[in-house]
Image (tube, rainbow, N blue to C red; front, side, top):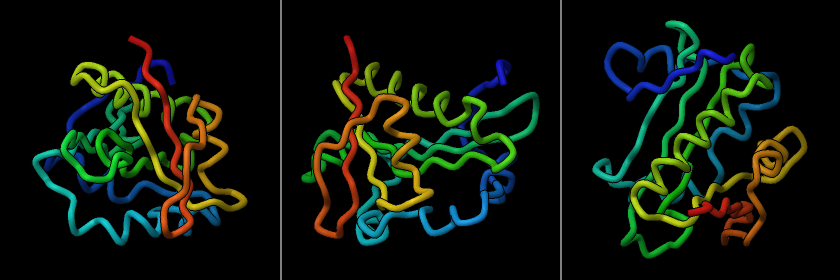
Length: 152
């Protein structure tokens, strides 16, 4: 999918972003427990939401957060959610989205981004490790905290 482009989440693409399909078994990994517990404290002003389009079709979605004052380090510059349509998985869409968020984080002066995931077979941990994230901790709910160091 060499022709991917990024677009801000908006009224014309939100339905497509919300209806991305998953592979069987992936639904259990949509939102780690920690995110579910913390979602009430997400500030809409710090959210960064984008879709990946291949031609004019939405094939992926990323929700990032940039909140340098957040009391939890893992929420200061993070991937809150990343979804790639089942048919587009394995074709570079997730990597494209994660790298776009990493570039935005660097532009804003951050030196790393984080992501949380629920450990388990078929979960997203393998993907995040493949694109350079390293395990740096665990939340009180047992979710893995992964970090990607951003080169200057």
